[in-house]
Amino acid sequence: PSEEELPGGMPNLPDGHPLNDLFKRFFGDQPPGQGERPEGPSSLGSGFIISKDGYVISNSHVVKGASEIIVRLSDRRELKAELVGSDPRSDIAVLKVKADGDLPTVKLGHSEELKVGEWVLAIGSPFGFDHSVTAGIVSAKGRSLPQENFVPFIQTDAAVNPGNSGGPLFNMRGEVIGINSQIYS
Image (cartoon, rainbow, N blue to C red; front, top):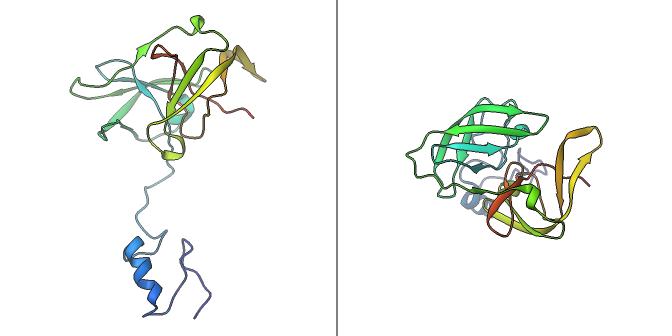
């Protein structure tokens, strides 16, 4: 048997090999890495709906350079979104989706009322895992990163991973008081 591998890491086994049936069961007739791929690069992020008429908040870096934006709701509906506006300095993007008015919205709070030591929840889709929630406390308010003095950050130890960007940061009253934006380690 050949030691070569097909693209995607699947071994190139001879016809009739017993493992071929196992690979077909899991991957179909095409080896891993040989299926359909979306054209061009894709990005993954989170966001939240702020109005019944379809306005969505996310991060600017999540939608930067996108030729198409698809918003997937918790009920698995997928809605095409238009970029209304984006500000890279504050890392905020406003999107608009068309829907029939039954969109789930969040309640907005005031970050200036947030206190250091208060519990917060970060919600998003880290690594593509939908509807993930992490909890933490507010470690500091009004933080700024080197070379980034425009927006004061809320520092928290709630785990935020790639894919959480743009998702809401909730206080314990269920109000959005921030947007998951950066990981600084």
